[in-house]
Image (cartoon, rainbow, N blue to C red; front, side, top):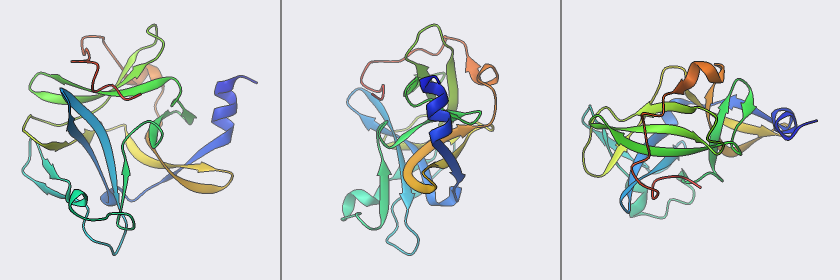
Length: 180
C-alpha cells in the first residue's frame, strides 16, 4: 500500500459551518500568510469584516486572550489541501501571490512536475488582512481520524486534480509567503 493510499484511508472529512470561519491573507514580512480563523459559538467575536472587493478583515482576536473563543490555523500543521477524497498535505503547500490587482491563494506542489492549484482570491488589494473567497469548487472541512473530528482544517474539493490545475503564470512573489 502506498503512502498516498494510507493517507486516504486514514483520514476522513466532515463538513463545517462556513459562517464560523474566515480565510484570510495576513500581512507577513514582504508578503502574506494564509490564516484560517474559526469562531467558537457563544464566545467573544474573533474578527470583523468591512468593504467588498476586497473585504478587509480586522483580526479582533489579537486584542484579547482568544484561547477559548477562537481557533487560529496559521500553518500546514493546522490546515492542508484535500481533493477527490485524498489528503494532499504532504504533496502541496499553500502560497499567496499578488497578480492582476489581487491576491491569489495557490496550492503549490512540492514536485514541480505536478500542476499548481488555484484555491481562491481576494478580489482586490488593500492594506491589512484580506478575506480570501474560495473558488466555487472549494470549501472548508475538518479532518476525521479514528472516527473523531480533529481541529485540522482542509481546503477541500471533490473535483479531480486536472479540473483544478492552473498554468504556471501565477508565480510566487517571494519566498516569505510560502507556507512550509
